[in-house]
Length: 282
Image (cartoon, rainbow, N blue to C red; front, side, top):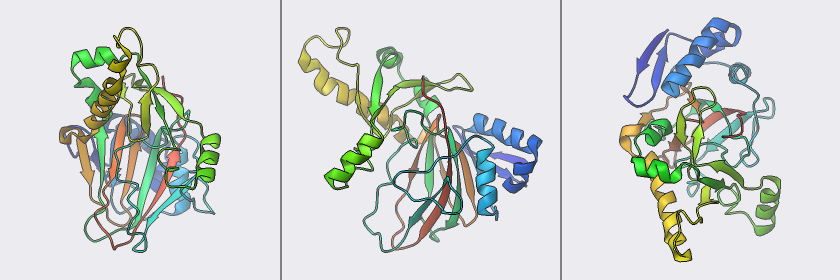
C-alpha cells in the first residue's frame, strides 16, 4: 500500500489496496485506522466492492446508524443513499460546512463514502481540518471560548423546510443537542473547534465575565459564533477530492468538517455512505 499525502493540512490517497481485503485482514485494517487518525481523511480509487463489503468494512470501526431524513439501502441498514438527480434542481442542502449528525447527543465518529455515479465535471467534496483550525486561533479567542457550549439542531436544518407538524415531530424525536465549542478528540487528545452549520447558538455566553450589560450579548455572541464557523472556510485548512465512480473516502468526523460542492446540475450524483456511531463529546 502506498500513502500519498494530498495537502499539508489533511488528506492522503491510499494506492494498491482494496477495502474489501481489510474486512478480513486485521493487520491491514489496523494500518488504515492509524492512517485515518493521522491524515483525518483517506481517499481511494477503483474500489469496485459490494455494498455488503462496504458496510462490513465500516462496521469494523463501530456500529452503524441510519439517518432520520435520508433513506438507507433496504438490504443494508446503515448504508445511507445520497442520491441527487436532474429532477432536483433546487436541492442545495448539502453545500454548507458541517460535521455529520452533531445534532445527535453522540455524533458520528466517522464515515465511509463511495461514489456510485457522478458528473463528468463537478460535484467534488471538500474537507477542513478543525484541529488545525483550533490550533491557529488567536490566543485571546481560545481563552474566550474555552468553557463555551453550543446547541446543534436538526429542526433548524433538515427540518426547516418541513410542514410545522412534521418539523416539531422531528425535534421531539431528536431534541437539540448541546456540545462543547472546543471538543477533545477521544483517541488523539487533540482539541477540536466544534461548531458548524448545525450550530444555532451558545448556551452559556451570557455571564458576567463576558457581558457588562444585556446588550453585549447581542451581537457579541452571534458575531463570535459566525467567526468560529467561518474558520472551516480557510483554504489552508482544506483538501478537495474529485470523484470518479468507485472512488471512496473515509473520514474522521470528529476532527473534520466537509462540504459537498453543488455545481453540477442537471447531472446525476449518487453516493452511498456508512456512518459510524461515535461518542458523546467532552
